[in-house]
Structure formats: structure tokens, C-alpha cells
Length: 414
Ligand code: HEC
Ligand code: HEC
Ligand code: HEC
Ligand code: HEC
Ligand code: HEC
Ligand code: HEC
Ligand code: HEC
Image 1 (cartoon, rainbow, N blue to C red):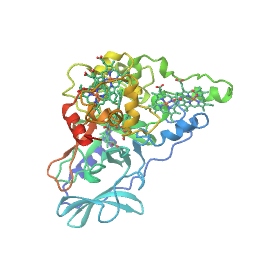
Image 2 (image 1 turned 180 degrees about the vertical axis):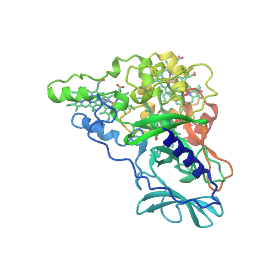
Image 3 (image 1 turned 120 degrees about the vertical axis):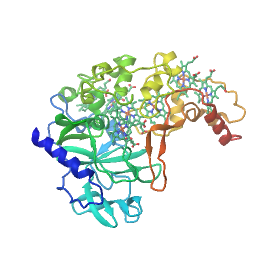
């Protein structure tokens, strides 16, 4: 592996050279090839296309979900930011910018100093469905790095990528398998090496499955497909994990593998199956319950929810009590509020005379699960000195006096 070790050292040296020095564009790296017929995860898996014949409605509605689109090959359609001249640049300083450009050989982030091109790397992978933000990665041989500029939906503009300095163009944030494990269904690792301070993953970019597919949640389904294809008369599910037969811990673990923050893993979660427990994958256990005030709202839905009274006192609440994994239901407060009402059908609120029952019944969420600023996810806009936080719905279901006050002010008399 000494050649690849040399290679990555060389990449890093090249990449961190300041913009004052002219650096040539490296070899054009092509995007990942389309998948071969056999599923790259190995025996047992078959891919989402094989589900269409028998689960057409689910397959169709699922295409619009954030999970399905949480990573993708780059294209003008997949990238939420603009490539139009005038809207396609992020300025670090008056004479230093990165421009997003469509060239004959692909889509690029191009660093300029005094209008002179200094470095250009092609968009290789899009991370994020574009609900709130997207970040972009590029390939350098078998390694993956983050591009300097990301997109913020909330700012409706290009922003400096999280974890890069605000005043310099950098291309050197190495990306390991973690991003793909939560934002994708699979990427094959050729190897991992300790190189100096860091652990470096080498990938096979021909073996990648973007977005979360059906089997990422339901487990390997090749046998299920072949059985039902040859037994069309069988109406009971065979050779597939039965979600309703899992206990509550197992049901929430299925979501918590990605919704409980970052972890050191001892086994890759790409092969997490329904019924598995988190301790089979994570090196240390997750603490739930107790003081949740220190947890970031971003990504910690599992811990926050399991600290809530709804979860502790109900014995039956899981993520699926409120979320339908096959349908894009974002911000549909009326639908979510009906799900609250399945357990809380006769709440008497002290402010019931101030706001109409209809308004209250169609939005339990803004008062009991308000959107709060994330400490972890911040993005810096071009014209700001400080990065702004993203707002995330807290899953610690409780009473929030400030949110209630705002809600009543907004709807008073309606
Ligand atoms: C040839 C038909 C066929 C194909 C193809 C097929 N299934 Fe099914 N599947 C069924 C039948 C029949 C059932 C039982 C009735 C139902 O729930 O629709 C079922 C039920 C299921 C269930 C529900 C299990 C439960 O908890 O009740 C899941 C999950 C599932 N299939 C996943 C998949 C996935 C993922 C794919 C694609 C990889 C797939 N199926 C492809 C026929 C098929
Ligand atoms: C393999 C990792 C993974 C698993 C498993 C997973 N999620 Fe997610 N989930 C994500 C990621 C990543 C996002 C952010 C998607 C984006 O917008 O790019 C997300 C987003 C979401 C959202 C926001 C969707 C929206 O449109 O606003 C909800 C709700 C959600 N997940 C619920 C669940 C539930 C419920 C389960 C379990 C049934 C689950 N997730 C399992 C990784 C995962
Ligand atoms: C442990 C799982 C996990 C890992 C590892 C992870 N993410 Fe995420 N990421 C999530 C979840 C879950 C969300 C949605 C969180 C929410 O809204 O609270 C998310 C949200 C995002 C979003 C916003 C998506 C949108 O459309 O709003 C971006 C961009 C993102 N992650 C990029 C990355 C990158 C880049 C990496 C690797 C450096 C990474 N993530 C690693 C789980 C993960
Ligand atoms: C984020 C995780 C996730 C993904 C991705 C996912 N599912 Fe599901 N699916 C679930 C959960 C959770 C349930 C159980 C819902 C319940 O019973 O409350 C379920 C239930 C089902 C069922 C049986 C119940 C029903 O709604 O008919 C079928 C069939 C199914 N899924 C097929 C699919 C197919 C096909 C895909 C891909 C197109 C897919 N699922 C993608 C989480 C997921
Ligand atoms: C599966 C049933 C279930 C669902 C669904 C559910 N809850 Fe609860 N919730 C409970 C139970 C049980 C309690 C505890 C009641 C008690 O202590 O008497 C509770 C308690 C609460 C409390 C009091 C919290 C506190 O700390 O005092 C609030 C507020 C609440 N729920 C709001 C909601 C909202 C809003 C939703 C929908 C977003 C929701 N719940 C969905 C079962 C549920
Ligand atoms: C009591 C109902 C309820 C339960 C249970 C629940 N959620 Fe949510 N969740 C919501 C509501 C309401 C929203 C906000 C509506 C929206 O963003 O579309 C939300 C939003 C989210 C988001 C997007 C947050 C954001 O601001 O971007 C994620 C991710 C998520 N839920 C994951 C989960 C996971 C994982 C679980 C299980 C650990 C879970 N939820 C359990 C009601 C619930
Ligand atoms: C305007 C904000 C607001 C809205 C909207 C709202 N709540 Fe509340 N809720 C509160 C406050 C504040 C309390 C504390 C008690 C009070 O003031 O009545 C509370 C109390 C509760 C409690 C605990 C009651 C008890 O007896 O301990 C539950 C459960 C609850 N709400 C559920 C819901 C559900 C379900 C919805 C939607 C149908 C909803 N809330 C809509 C603000 C709100």
C-alpha cells in the first residue's frame, strides 16, 4: 500500500498549498460508474428496482423522500445551488472566490484569485437531499474530499462548507466512510490506513449505492423477491423481517443507527438489519433519558425522544408512530398533529379561549416540538462574519413557554 500512501500525502501537500501559488488542475476524475446487474452489497441483496412489481405505490412515493435523495451523482438537477453567472460564486475576500461552473467535462468548483483560475475540482458526490443544506465531495484517485463551497436552502445561497476556515479556500478535508454509512446505502472500501494523525479510507467508486434504498431499512430481500415471484398466490410476507414483530427497542434502533449522533463503530452499519441492536455496531453504548439539555438537536432524535414523557410513559411510541417512512410529509403539521391525537384526544389547554380549537388541533408541533438552533450545524454566508445556526425540530417533546407565547401572539383571535 506504500504507493497509495505516497499518493495521499502528495494530494494533501498539493491541496493545502495556498492560493497565492498556481497549482494545475489534477486529472479529471470521472463520476462513479453505473452499477453492475448484481447488487454490490453481495449475496442476499437485490436492489430497489426489484421491488417495483409488487410494491409499486410504496416505490413511487418513496422516490420523493429525503432518505431516497440524501446522496446522489452530481447533476444540475440534483445540485440545489445556481450555476448561472452572477449567482454562481462564493466570495472569501474581494479578490478570492470559488465559482460553480458547468464545463464540457462536468460540473466544477473553481478557485480564482484576482480572476485567475488557481484550482478546479469536479463535483463527485452530492450529500444532502436539499431540505436544509447540501455539501459536495470530490474524488481524488480512491480518496474522497469535501469541496469548499456548500449550499444552504435557508440562506438560498452558496455558503462556506462547514469545518473549513471562513477566509481561505481549502480542498483538503478528507472524507471517510461515515458520511456514506448514514447518507447512502453502500460504498465499497478497498482498505483503510492510519496515515500520520488520520485514518484514510480508500474506496472503489464503481461500487456505490446512492441514497437510502429499501433494503437499507428492510435488510437483504433477494430471497423474498425470488420466493414471491415463483409463488404469486402467497399473500403472506416470506423471507423478510417483519417490523411489527420486533420489540420497541429494535424498532427504534433501526432509525437510531443514523439518528443518534456520531459514533465510533466496530462494524459497518451498511449491513444493519431489522432486529439488530445498536451494541452490535457501536463501540460504546448510547445514554438515553436523563438530562437532554446538553444534546444537540441535530441528529440526536433518538436520545431526545427517549427522554420525553410520551416515550417513557407510553410503552408503544416509536419513530413510526409519527413518521411514515415511505412518504414525504415534511412540515405537514395537520398530519403530525393527528398522530399526536391518537394518544392525546382530549387535552384541555389553559389558553383555549385565546386561540381557536382548529388552530390548536392542527399544530401541536410548533409549541411542543419547536424548531431550535443547532449548535453543531452552522453555515457562514458571504456577507456575514459569523456562521448562523440551522434550526432543527427538537424531539424532546415538552412544554416550551417561549414557543407557546409566540404561537398565541401569532394566532390570537384566529
Ligand atoms: C413478487 C412479488 C414481490 C416482490 C418483487 C417484492 N415483494 Fe415484498 N411482499 C410481497 C408480498 C406478497 C408481501 C405480503 C403482502 C404485503 O405486505 O404487501 C410482501 C411484504 C413485504 C414487506 C412487509 C413485511 C411485513 O412486515 O409485513 C416488506 C418490508 C417487503 N415486502 C419488502 C420488499 C422489498 C424491500 C422488495 C424489493 C427488494 C420486495 N418486498 C419485493 C411480494 C413481493
Ligand atoms: C442509514 C441511515 C438512516 C436510517 C437507517 C434512517 N435515517 Fe432518517 N435520515 C437520515 C439522513 C441522512 C437524513 C437527512 C436526509 C437529507 O435530507 O439529506 C434523514 C432524515 C430523516 C427525516 C427528515 C425527513 C424530512 O423530509 O424532513 C426523518 C423524519 C427521518 N429521517 C426519520 C427516520 C425514521 C423514522 C427512520 C427509521 C424508520 C430513519 N429515519 C432511518 C438517515 C437515516
Ligand atoms: C451518524 C449518521 C450521520 C453521519 C456519520 C453523517 N450524517 Fe449528515 N445527517 C445525518 C442526519 C440524521 C441528518 C438529518 C439531521 C436532522 O435534520 O436533524 C443529516 C443531515 C445532513 C445534511 C443536511 C441535509 C439536508 O438536506 O438538509 C448534510 C449536508 C449532511 N448531513 C452532510 C454530511 C456529511 C458531509 C457527512 C460526513 C462528513 C455527514 N453528513 C455525516 C446523519 C449523519
Ligand atoms: C427509512 C426506512 C425505510 C425505508 C428506506 C423503506 N421502508 Fe418500508 N417500512 C419501514 C418501516 C419502519 C415499516 C413499518 C411501518 C409500520 O408498520 O409502522 C415499513 C413497512 C413496509 C411494508 C409493509 C407495510 C406497508 O406499508 O405496506 C412494505 C411492503 C415496505 N415497507 C416496503 C418498502 C419498499 C418497497 C421500500 C423501498 C421503495 C421501503 N419499504 C423503504 C421503513 C422503511
Ligand atoms: C403513543 C402515544 C403517544 C403519542 C403518539 C404522543 N404522545 Fe405525548 N404523551 C404520551 C404519554 C403516555 C404521555 C404521558 C402522560 C402522563 O404523564 O400522564 C405523554 C405526554 C405528553 C406531554 C406532557 C409532557 C410533559 O413533559 O409533561 C406533552 C406536551 C405531549 N405528550 C405532547 C405530544 C405531542 C405534541 C405529540 C405529537 C407530536 C404527542 N405527544 C404524541 C403518549 C403519546
Ligand atoms: C410524536 C411524534 C414524533 C415522533 C415519535 C418522532 N418524530 Fe420526528 N418529527 C416529528 C415532527 C412533528 C417533525 C417536524 C415536522 C417536519 O419536519 O416535517 C419531525 C421531524 C423529524 C426530523 C427532521 C428534523 C428537522 O428539523 O429537520 C427528523 C430527522 C426526525 N423527525 C426523525 C425522527 C426519528 C429518528 C424518530 C425516532 C427516534 C422520530 N423522528 C420520532 C414528530 C415525531
Ligand atoms: C399554543 C401552544 C400549544 C399548542 C398549539 C398545543 N399545546 Fe399542548 N400545551 C401547551 C402548554 C403551554 C401546555 C401546559 C398546560 C397549559 O397551559 O394548558 C400544554 C400541555 C399539553 C399537554 C399536557 C397536558 C396535561 O394535562 O399535563 C399535552 C398532552 C398536550 N399539551 C398536547 C397537545 C396536543 C396533542 C396538541 C395538538 C392537538 C397541543 N398540545 C397543542 C401549549 C400548546
